[in-house]
Length: 498
Image (cartoon, rainbow, N blue to C red):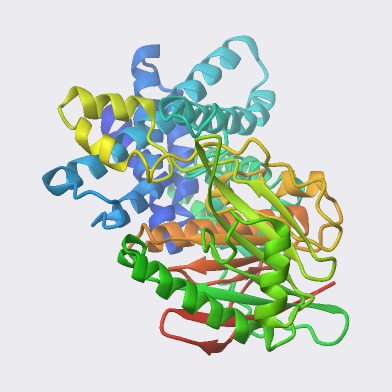
């Protein structure tokens, strides 16, 4: 540490790299604790506030850049109605870089708060106990900064984007994952920083020839646990039976009337097969548009009765709707038992495909690429839902966590707060924008495991261009067997306790 302390900028780069590498290579998650300890060491070295603040920004920007690498999996961008051509790679790079910098602002806040409390809190023990809260506050501010810089017609200022929160690194250890039961990723982050402080104190207190013992501290954390539990199954009347439709339609099909017709026919086939298993629920991926939401509920009931024999299953669908010249992503939950339908809209939208942030749109026009914005304006023009509450849903209907709402640490918490007795959480997903985004998939798995543990609810995903999974209240991931499949669809049957 002494050597790198003399080259403090190198030290900050190393600290940021150690903090971020576990998000890309999960097996190296424990290095994040080393990175956090090293960052805390660097911050207390003699230096100006400006240098320390820039160092904190650098560390946390690098830390954010690692989990945000999934942005590159959008290349090539083949889901837009216009060709981006030569600006495609620079565009992805700029969005990845700037997103990391916005999130990295949290590092400045952490440095400022540490300096402030160090000046007024004289007991080192109390300061050490304050550090986890300071760290969490910094990461939350980073999320808020990101939301401010990506404001647009489909967003608001919030702390919902949680990529890079250090607590997620502890999920690689199933024993430490239990801490999520207290306050989700926030309690995990608190524990993470305590472990980093413990490591730092251990290194400082031990004689130099015994510092290798600190490796034992880290090795104790590296216990091989498995998050997969493919044998999980519940039988009998004590279980909900859920048919999950998983799709993989080429994005080009959406660009023609014949393609849309093919999608509709394939979904109808998948629905028929799903209903043959007599499920209590059928879940479809986000934006499947199985039901025509432009028609009234009476039409839907008649259609379903005629086409499928009037089943009693609950069908969870969603799709694009236009209301008063505004575009929303709206869930359509059909209750086959009570012959009623409920609708509500998505409340958290992704700036990388559901709306264009004002700052980035302005930059496009400034540099002469306004025609690109005009070309995608219709497709990338969603707005936040004006009717997103799920508190009035029937007792038998699941909560619905839309795609990408899983990045909100309190996403499921909010649903459970509205309806404490909801049977489970349905999670419709669409990853058609991406090309095998392994970094993204792993992080979303981690986020959903944490939310399942914290809220003690099963979360069942129905995915497009990704694998559908079940996340249990114990933090396990269940991938159910495929019971049927067609050219562009698969059906899985999941059973969870009532």
